[in-house]
Length: 112
Length: 111
Image (cartoon, rainbow over the protein chains, first blue to last red):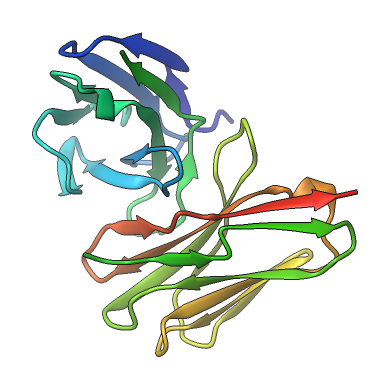
């Protein structure tokens, strides 16, 4: 049983570019959450998707958007990249009504 | 703005030592408290999800307690082993709210 998978593992972009990160949830999970982890901080909640809709959102600008597909996989898109967007982006999946999160290994994004 | 504080920031112990960390969170609107272990180059892994005041959970040598009235949770590791070396994250969730993580406690166990 594959756990949560994220791609790519690493990514280097320049300021102003756009990026798309991908996540496949653990088998049987229907809810996907995205987190940003900057150095020295805990993961910060970006948003959560369930039934292909954004259900909750953290304090992130509209440059951060997402999508969930019918197979429950998800994408995180970031437009007009800033240097401050450099971070580890974690995807976590869960089953609606169950609290425990299962995390992927993350995508390390570097913005130059 | 919700504040979740973890202490200490880092901890170095000898193999066999017992240790504990603290997670402080808001004492109102409590829904759940999570603990995760994050080993280097791996994914964060859930240890416990606690929802009831006074709850105690145990997994092998690791245990956790919860006090929602005063807003804290303790994580204990008995007889630390080198494989316990990791960052331990706690996260607080209020009713209808998102999960808010602390910055973590880094544990290094020396053999």
